[in-house]
Amino acid sequence: MKPLKIVVIGGGAAGFFGAIICAQTYPHSQVTLLEAGQTPLAKVRISGGGRCNVTHACFDPVRLSQNYPRGGKALRGAFTRFQPQDTIAWFESRGVKLKTEADGRMFPITDSSETIVDCLTKAAKDAGVILRTGMVVQSVEKVGEEFEITLKSGEKEKRDRVLIATGSNPKGYGWLKNLGHTFQPPVPSLFTFKIKDPRLQDLAGVSLENVHLRLQAGKAKLEQTGALLVTHWGLSGPGILKLSAWGARLLHDYNYNLPLFINWLPEYNRESLCQVLLKTKTEFPKRQIISHCPVSLPKRLWQRFVTTVGIETEQRWAEVSKKHLNLLLKELIQGEYTIQGKGVFKEEFVTCGGVTLKEVDFKTMESKRCPGLYFAGEVLDIDGVTGGFNFQNAWTTAWLAGQGLGSAFS
Image 1 (cartoon, helix red, strand yellow):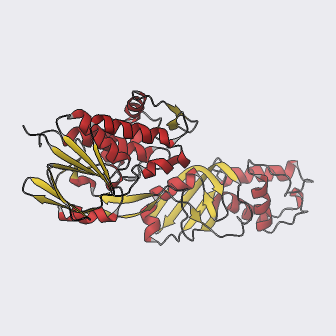
Image 2 (image 1 turned 90 degrees about the horizontal axis):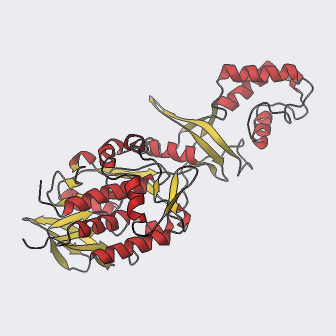
Image 3 (image 1 turned 180 degrees about the vertical axis):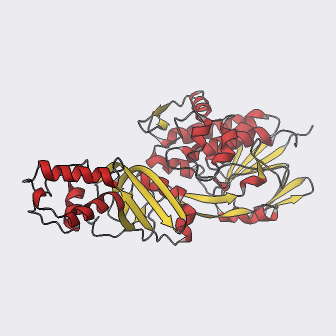
């Protein structure tokens, strides 16, 4: 049996990991990794603020899959074969220990993404992977039983199997269409909200551990609970990022212009909060409203809400009217803000969209439309919330693809 010639297109996390697993599992094969840029693993280097959030300490496949707004169902079975415990073991077997932070995110103990880059680069070299940088692929075509790869330089190469790990690069979708695939158009996910509102002005840096957020457009309603941070341009924080991920397509369809409803005190409903305010009015009648906050809110935020509803700064609790109490209640548990655009989340950018998942066999990551063609990472219509989940998708799908690439056709 002649050695299989395999090409991996895309030198990111998924491409590297898929090439390594394939070369290790099928040492008789010849694995070539093509990267368009001069520096592979560029996104790994900048991820997590240069620390690289490798994965998340969630070891139950069902719970883990719930962190993917798109692709969770398809990944559930995949995670029974390769999940964060396997990622941790793989890196630790190569001398890279990971640590878990309070929120479940996992980083190398060095706090440097270079540790991960060096590990993947060395593992690829040791496994015999041929890395070629500056290789821009123009087209991928099926010619008989082989694939013909045409590079921008005009060079053509024949390969037996192909793994596409180009991320959410629309250029790659052109080839995939020619190979019989459809894809969901890519749109941004994981972003902050631009909101210009006098209630938030000059409050940058104010943060809350837990708020309830709701987006609504017609019959569509999305909700999320989590931490929130007021910024110079609007709102950020884990709760906002999760909401942007789950609402990525809805927000895109409405041109990032939708009402956002905030319950700043999700532990209360209108009735229970009303009781707290009335009790405060009875028990502390002589105290000034602006300086005596009866709920757990940042001082600056409470003061802003008090003045927003028209309560005078000198006014005491005994003097507050029913009208002002109702207005304050609404601000606290049903504040309405208008999203006026999207910001970015650090240097990281995640998109939803990609190859339609029903066209891929998630046992091997092989195309159901084109035998010998495989996929891994963000080129698929899969995206996770922030916290290491997008990298785990890359490791899992790349591991499955690496296992499948050198095997006999199903």
